Image (cartoon, rainbow, N blue to C red):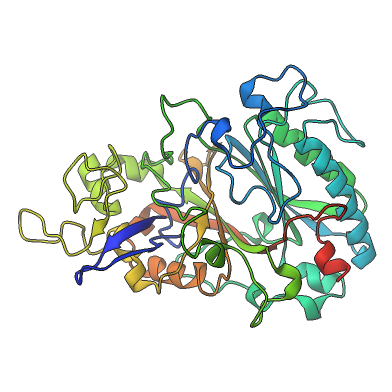
Length: 423
């Protein structure tokens, strides 16, 4: 999946989404928003941690209480645990409220580098915060289970079926979704285990996926990360400070958006397996034509080699033979904003590799995560377009997914979900 500056034949330059999932959601969706970024550069990171003798990387701390939940605007950490829980029968609204109060207390302590007050198994005892973030979302089914159907956001309607989808419901959806990111694997596992223990009797784990990105400091300089296809992945992802950024990513009251979700977002999750054996059989020049970019530096095929990934894409450019420099079914062309109504998402994806399938092929690919103000205007139209005409689609399989209303940030003295449950 890709997001770019694209120059149209008329000469206009626009910034908008250039790609999501679908049978073809990749080149900007990839292994992270900003690739390898040192922890000191993380927005809001506090290098003064309470994590004992943790080193510089472990000392990175992301504030828990803010206008928006942590784990949305921060660069992707090195490790992630994604999971969904279903409420047990009879838990109801009161059970959910009590659970979210317990989770709030635990997450606030863990993100500060402190042991959880309950059920701490000492797995991460000698680690610092490691830029830990925990991001919570509600699935559509939660509202029926808690008597809150009248407060379910209209935009949380089920996503349509897309051509090529082969989604396993057991590995997607769910009442409660959590994204747990950190720069240490033990820290993410510890946090998930703590939340799971605190949920006992109220909510049960439905599914879980682990992913990874580039470890901060692994590259000689901060660079955009690569996905498992070897492509630079995350080019020109929308960034805070850009005109209209907040309106594209975060919800505001008005229309059919509920007031309780103001400052929240919507998250589309997709587990996308890459057919790496088939992809790696292609010579590099053919891989580049599928994407529309060079593997070496991410520069578009419409520009000279070495021009860099930030060079605007020119869809009207011709090659030496007079044909289109960027093929008609190239990912960057099919996903171009001119054909997708300017749809924009903030992608924060991670790679995964879970061994081999029975046929010996890698069970590996992308855990696609995209935050947006309204999936009806973001993910859905772009995915529909990509699933029908993206040349990348023949190398991808969408195997699980979900849509969640991501809660606003936690105010001082409050708890996760309070805007809905006490509103």
